Image 1 (cartoon, helix red, strand yellow):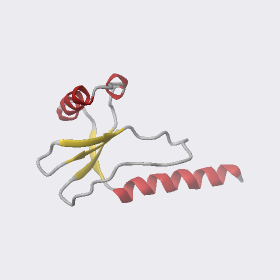
Image 2: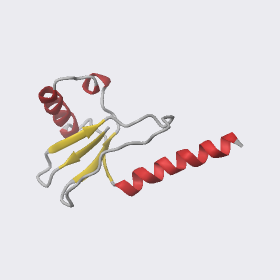
Image 3: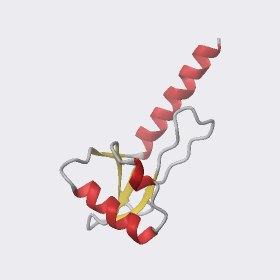
Length: 95
Protein backbone atom coordinates (compact mmCIF):
# COMPACT_ATOMS: atom_id res chain seq x y z
CA UNK A 1 0.00 0.00 0.00
CA UNK A 2 1.15 3.52 -0.69
CA UNK A 3 0.38 6.31 1.77
CA UNK A 4 0.98 10.03 1.63
CA UNK A 5 1.71 11.90 4.84
CA UNK A 6 1.41 15.65 5.28
CA UNK A 7 4.09 17.81 6.92
CA UNK A 8 2.85 16.86 10.39
CA UNK A 9 3.01 13.10 9.64
CA UNK A 10 -0.76 12.63 9.28
CA UNK A 11 -1.87 10.15 6.60
CA UNK A 12 -3.83 12.12 4.01
CA UNK A 13 -4.07 9.55 1.19
CA UNK A 14 -3.70 5.83 0.65
CA UNK A 15 -3.80 3.46 -2.31
CA UNK A 16 -3.54 -0.29 -2.60
CA UNK A 17 -0.76 -0.95 -5.11
CA UNK A 18 -1.57 -2.65 -8.38
CA UNK A 19 -0.35 -6.16 -9.07
CA UNK A 20 2.97 -6.26 -10.97
CA UNK A 21 1.08 -8.29 -13.60
CA UNK A 22 -1.30 -5.40 -14.29
CA UNK A 23 -1.05 -3.84 -17.73
CA UNK A 24 -1.48 -0.33 -16.33
CA UNK A 25 0.46 1.15 -13.42
CA UNK A 26 -1.24 3.84 -11.37
CA UNK A 27 -0.10 5.33 -8.11
CA UNK A 28 -0.69 8.32 -5.90
CA UNK A 29 1.89 11.08 -5.59
CA UNK A 30 2.23 13.99 -3.17
CA UNK A 31 1.08 17.32 -4.60
CA UNK A 32 2.82 19.41 -1.94
CA UNK A 33 6.64 19.37 -1.56
CA UNK A 34 6.22 18.97 2.21
CA UNK A 35 4.18 15.77 1.79
CA UNK A 36 5.95 12.42 1.72
CA UNK A 37 5.19 9.12 0.00
CA UNK A 38 5.62 5.81 1.84
CA UNK A 39 5.27 2.15 0.92
CA UNK A 40 3.71 -0.03 3.61
CA UNK A 41 4.50 -3.62 2.68
CA UNK A 42 2.60 -5.59 5.28
CA UNK A 43 -0.95 -4.25 5.36
CA UNK A 44 -3.43 -6.98 6.34
CA UNK A 45 -6.18 -7.66 3.79
CA UNK A 46 -8.77 -6.82 6.44
CA UNK A 47 -7.56 -3.21 6.42
CA UNK A 48 -7.55 -2.98 2.61
CA UNK A 49 -11.12 -4.29 2.53
CA UNK A 50 -12.56 -1.63 4.85
CA UNK A 51 -15.22 0.42 3.06
CA UNK A 52 -15.87 3.11 5.68
CA UNK A 53 -13.33 5.94 5.10
CA UNK A 54 -13.27 7.06 8.74
CA UNK A 55 -12.68 3.53 10.00
CA UNK A 56 -10.07 2.91 7.28
CA UNK A 57 -8.17 6.08 8.23
CA UNK A 58 -8.24 5.16 11.92
CA UNK A 59 -7.05 1.60 11.33
CA UNK A 60 -4.39 2.36 8.69
CA UNK A 61 -2.99 5.16 10.86
CA UNK A 62 -2.77 2.80 13.83
CA UNK A 63 -1.11 0.13 11.68
CA UNK A 64 1.42 2.48 10.04
CA UNK A 65 2.43 3.89 13.42
CA UNK A 66 2.75 0.46 15.06
CA UNK A 67 6.05 -1.30 15.60
CA UNK A 68 4.86 -4.15 13.38
CA UNK A 69 4.52 -2.03 10.23
CA UNK A 70 7.13 -2.21 7.50
CA UNK A 71 7.16 1.36 6.20
CA UNK A 72 9.71 2.82 3.79
CA UNK A 73 9.73 6.29 2.33
CA UNK A 74 9.75 6.25 -1.47
CA UNK A 75 9.26 8.66 -4.37
CA UNK A 76 7.91 8.83 -7.91
CA UNK A 77 11.26 7.96 -9.50
CA UNK A 78 11.50 4.73 -7.49
CA UNK A 79 7.93 3.76 -8.38
CA UNK A 80 8.59 4.41 -12.08
CA UNK A 81 11.84 2.41 -11.96
CA UNK A 82 9.98 -0.62 -10.60
CA UNK A 83 7.37 -0.32 -13.34
CA UNK A 84 10.03 -0.02 -16.07
CA UNK A 85 11.84 -3.11 -14.74
CA UNK A 86 8.58 -5.05 -14.89
CA UNK A 87 7.99 -3.90 -18.48
CA UNK A 88 11.54 -4.84 -19.46
CA UNK A 89 11.21 -8.32 -17.96
CA UNK A 90 7.95 -8.82 -19.86
CA UNK A 91 9.65 -7.83 -23.11
CA UNK A 92 12.53 -10.23 -22.44
CA UNK A 93 10.24 -13.15 -21.65
CA UNK A 94 8.14 -12.47 -24.77
CA UNK A 95 11.17 -12.85 -27.04
